[in-house]
Image (cartoon, rainbow, N blue to C red; front, side, top):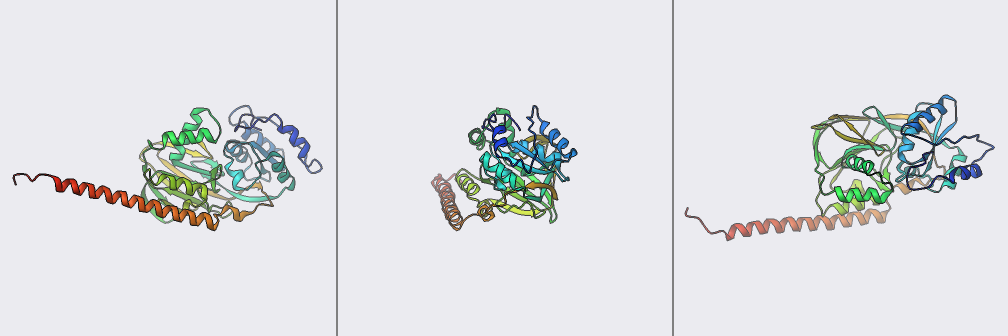
Length: 335
């Protein structure tokens, strides 16, 4: 249990576990983390001792550490989500309520699921480079927690961030693209129901790559709406594809993130998927169809996208007309 993750106090959680966990089925112990990397050590020790489940009580950072400690073993990952975003827990449709999350653990429904590796570092939800890695770094530097602090960084830095040019190598060959960000997703969302890869599955042996091309201020609201509307893959500024492996070359070293944790790496970024590499406790009652947008959400996204496209075209046309008008008003020179 990470005592400082997210914005939720953890002092009452041990008693809730004591009262709610099925003790006819489980024996358990609780250990609080004391430093970065401690959750990995605790989980690895639990795996070595043959524990059936290692439960992460915290956010995506804590989940990542625990999961790294038990990959390729018979110990399953459980999650009691108490973080700022809870991206993996939300993708798995686990309850955000502590009592209900423990009741899911009581069902002991275990699935073998995929995870990813970026430059040797395992990730279980999303990873990437560009703006999202930059914001992860700013968020970590701020020392603040919660979605409000995250949004503050996005609003403050978004208009100043300059897109980069990337060389992408995958099974289909090599291509160049200029992008605001490149995300590789094992699960569908960053957290707080912001869906970066609405079609992502943790059991298909593939990563969902999302490339957001440069956009202007008029197009930014549509991208935000689509991300929370589960329709980002339908936006004209977005390119998506699935792959087992991708290599990205940048002009220089820079930040990447894995499950929201920023780290500086060199110019080359290598990302791959590990098929069925980890056992996880899942929600047997999850309504998986709710991960997909409804007909109303899809219709709204397409309608709003059309409006933005028309307004953008009119502004571009107006700018061209203004430029032409200035040319026509110029006085002829002597020639």
